[in-house]
Amino acid sequence: MSRAEAATGPAGIDVGSASPLWTLGLLRSELVTTFRRWRTLALLGVLAAVPILVGVAVRIETRDGSSVGGGGGGGPAFITQITNNGLFLVFTALAATLPFFLPMAVGVVAGDAIAGEANAGTLRYLLVAPAGRTRLLLTKYATTMAFCLVATLVVAVSALTVGALLFPLGDLTTISGTQISFAEGLGRALLIALVVAASLIGLAALGLFVSTLTNSGIAAMATTVGLLITVQILDQIPQLHAIQPYFFSHYWLSFADLMREPVYWDGLVKNLELQALYAAVFGSAAWARFTAKDITA
Amino acid sequence: MDEASATQPQRAARDVDDSVIHTRALTKRYRGGQLAVDGLDLTVPAGSVFGFLGPNGSGKTTTIRMLMGLIEPTSGTARVLGHPMPRSSRAVLPHVGALIEGPALYGFLTGRDNLVRYDSADPTADPRTRSSRVAAALDRVGLTAAGGKKARAYSLGMKQRLGLAAALLQPRRLLVLDEPTNGLDPQGMREIRSLVRELASDGTTVFLSSHLLDEIEQVCTHAAVMARGRLVTQGAVAELAAGARGRLVVTTPDPAEAARVLKEQGVGDVVVADDRVTGEPPERDLADVNAALVTAGVRVRGFGVERASLEDAFVALTGEGFDVAG
Image 1 (cartoon, rainbow over the protein chains, first blue to last red):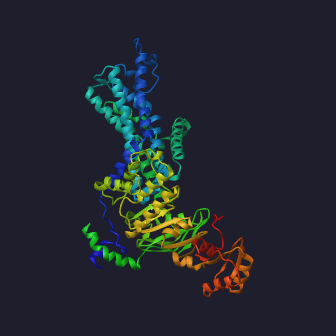
Image 2: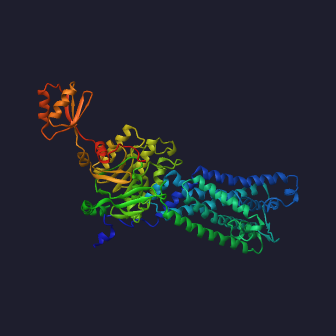
Image 3: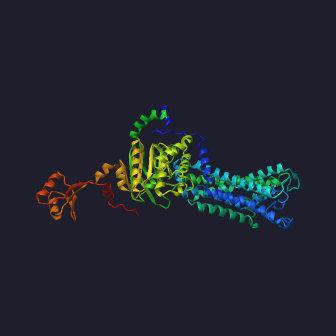
């Protein structure tokens, strides 16, 4: 066989001439397509509004010098500290959105990832382009994780802005009672935002798997958000404590441990391990399902 | 590009004996037991405009999806451009432009951005030439002016054109067009037909599925007919149509007398309908038949043989009309 024959197939097809960087091109296209959707922007808008609502409510309630919740200790974590330091609004907002708003937004994006394309029929054209099933799935997962990060940062930045406008800023008191500088506080806030974003990785993988099971984007989104609500409810039932450590949301609020001095790592590590486990299990399931699936939509 | 042109004659020589699509006993049984495609042996010669014909539900789209690697065959093999599918999707599909079961677009993106999106999914597409190739594809289907409009505002015909443009983003060796004139007005259909002829004259093999017989007849050099998941026939269109013989048609104000004379002259299956008398032409020279009519005093307004259409051939082959298979 001559060299020319080896480089081309029997019918003269060039094999493997593609640039290894093309996957980035697909990823960029995917990111642009996702973040230009009106729906994505609306979700981010809702998330940005939560800290504004919390900040304004706290400001109004404490106008007369009284403490938040009448000193009863109700509401999300850190809420009583906001009046002393606006930076605490970041922690409060993340604690308030993590149980439902953030994962719901992620569930919508992840659930729609494959099923939405199948529903619109665009999936078949991406695959004959040919995007490649594994590459498309990885691109979709990377985009969903990018959305987790962006969504968390939107909450954090909105909270920081509102906090700075409505309340004083300065050195913070940690949960352990020690003082840290404002700069270090900002660093902790960023770290907490990253941990919160990472907390959503497991749900993103679950949503992507659900998305490969159906050709209806709406059904996949509803199923993913439904699973989220179910797990959140089951996590509150004491009799189920034996299986609760395996719920993806079980260690979510452990991010507060980053505000201890020294930082208490146990819950944080368990959370990240659990997210990695979910990503591995449901990522593999999604891959097995999607690469073997007949595309009939 | 120099390299490509240097290997061109070599490729062309190989393609003579290489078919562009070749399936052997290709079978698809869906979950639930429905046999959609049953032992298909299809051969599409390089450089042909191949009409893939059959009623709705006859297995055309399932076959196309198997050829494009979207559906795994239950048994049998499919080779496209000489490579097995779906295993070689990555190598084969960049050389194939496809329009499958109508266009599918992102309604929230403009027509131009839809093409950019599909082009960036192609691993062999050069991002540096992307915008010029997108512009050229839009121009080719007459959508340059509407390229900046959101795709959800497109009419069905415009969507169909944009789908075609996506298939034309790169020079292709094979175009698979499933019902490409669906939703187009007569002018649009004519444009698509001339586009198909133009592409074919550049050497692109065109695989065109349709349920419109006259469309296939107008543009295709070869055709295959499917019915109920099985291949009924395949071959050159001229041969297929020749398989069904034309009919002798005599138009006359004296149909009864004409029918008697025609039978005498050896015309079989004579049918009288108003002033038209039709029958299977005899072996002898038709001029003699005409002379016999005139000699017998039959006043003849029209005399001739109506060429058999592909539809006649289809009916002759399947023994049925062109209805949806149950």
